[in-house]
Length: 168
Length: 126
Image (cartoon, rainbow over all chains, first blue to last red; front, side, top):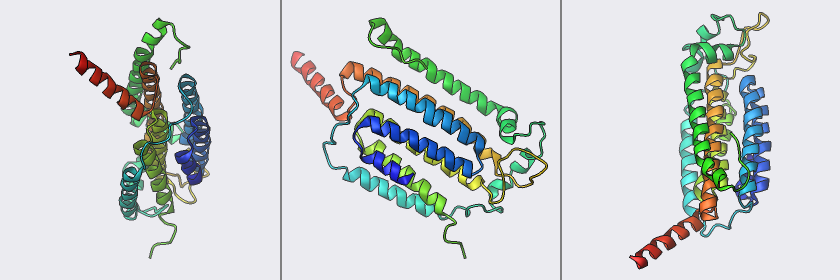
């Protein structure tokens, strides 16, 4: 997965980058299955590998598919990235170890979620729709706003009669 | 004494995150930048999901045969994040398409050059 991402950094043909990002999403979904996050994996495979790839391909269809050669050497971004990485690794060393049952996240509200209060065996669904219903409402608001923004952006184009519409 | 691979997953997460960050900062192409942003996002999914996993546990679907489950709360948060992520990606791509129509390019350098040219043109006319 890391090798794939590094290839994506250096490839200049955008089409192959998009295809690689689809593969990357599927790999990520597999990793998520291994981490027992089946709902997330399903969403990632459908949305990350499916919808995102289609959207990117649609945008590429309307734009040029080759990236220009960078005008200057990327030393400054490289320095920023490497120092960020060093900081993040330093921070990550303070996190609880993998699969530590004593860590804080397993002891706050989660035991209550796992008591099956709402009579839905899939806990993720129960939390999403019941305990954290307002979050989901906020999420749908964001998606609605994004959809409205896209329509507002692309409507003028259609009136000019150029090209095909990329629906949301 | 901590085991050697106790933090391996976090290292992978950090590498992915920094690769995404590097693409966003260093590449001038707007679509490439958006792809970098989505790599960054997926690394955050990993960062959230990894601490929720318990070795020997199963997916959080209640069943009398199991008693150890992975933590469902990060799954819910990331489910929301994935959907929001694709919404922002779509909005960003729509913006890129509009920019491409007005400027004929989605390279940051070329767009800046065109902007500078237009500003000079204005000055000479005024």
